[in-house]
Image 1 (cartoon, rainbow, N blue to C red):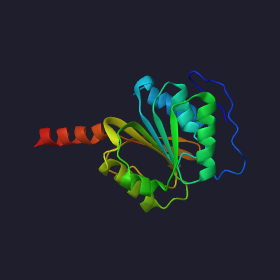
Image 2 (image 1 turned 90 degrees about the vertical axis):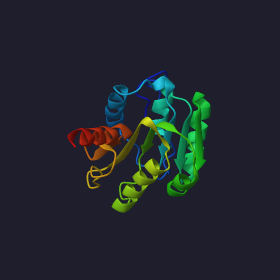
Image 3 (image 1 turned 135 degrees about the vertical axis):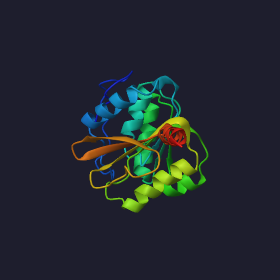
Image 4 (image 1 turned 180 degrees about the horizontal axis):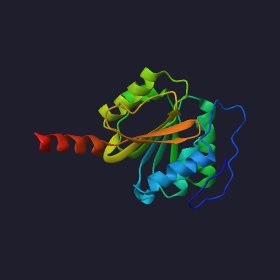
Length: 192
């Protein structure tokens, strides 16, 4: 696993073999950040990564100057690895061990980007519940973006605030934004 851009471009990160993870491929990461690059100035972003795993996505954000970054994962091994890597690179990343759904129920904060990479076998209803909880709890800034990575078998384009999706091999990134819903409401109001 390597950091693909920013201050630490090219640096390799080697997580322990025993972590229960499926890291986002370098090709998919590069494609994801090409999309985000067209929407955001990274140096001013607050980021939340859910189901963080190795923290691979957070390291990309940190290498590009994002700060602060919060990682949430249910596995203590993943959390410890993220803490160790963040310290080594002097990244402004905080990692906490928590069930993501319990975290979403209780956490108060505001983020420019929320990235979620649940296990691909997460039930469809749980994908939907997670997205609804993020928008209902107002964790996402009005100008922000939620990105959910999932397999092609999970369908999320019917959800409120859906914006667009990109497919890369067996992975899909689905993007959600408040502005999409606002624009649709404005169009509907104009039509009346």
